[in-house]
Length: 309
Image (tube, rainbow, N blue to C red; front, side, top):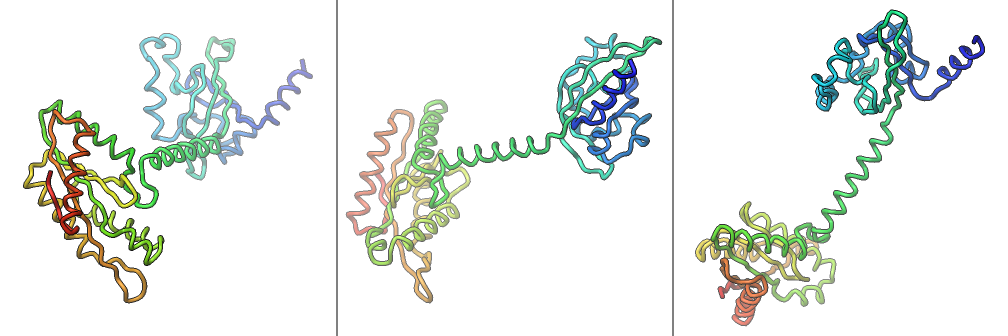
């Protein structure tokens, strides 16, 4: 028996995971050296103290939300820390230096003592690295998802995202008997800008014109880059007069915008716009065709103008 006790004592002392034993009142009865390393406390400071004092405050509700007090009342009515109920769960541990460490602990009930009181053990490990990886993965997935719907150059919705919004707006029109406006915008003489000043300047124009659009649209409106130098606008619940005001403001904002090319040289850019008001009966393709016809009308009228279908 002495050999066995010595064996288990060495096993606990060498274990990399923290090993805890608490009584049914949550008072710490035993820890191994890994607990001291994890918490920053000496064994003398921990043994005899209440385990719940090590649990970060924000976790108190989390520890109890999935715990049915009525169901387990007879079994653990004297247990202060439901975290020691059999099972594995994650929570945050507060160290001596008041730092918060995410941990995972597998808990189980030990055999009752001679006086009938219960004892519980927990094997705990630091999961900071795992949590960091999970957060990085979450952020990466969120970024990839965002990039799938965002035009990388202008950082506004791309064609796919814009047409998704378009379909939803049509569905809303049908459901609530509403009307909206689609506008298609084309940068005038954009090929000449690229040919004359290079694609870097062309990209600069695209980025800055997108900023001008965002700054002059209403919060409820949607803009997207749907082609090389072509943009789309969705103006929900907008009548002809309201659409004209919004789109004319966009045209003038671009016309008066100074596109910096190089020192003391600014480029003037204009846009042509075509728009159509639609309701519940037109399909997406029909609405786009009408807006395109209005855009061609603007182009054929000398550009830098706004036309309605």
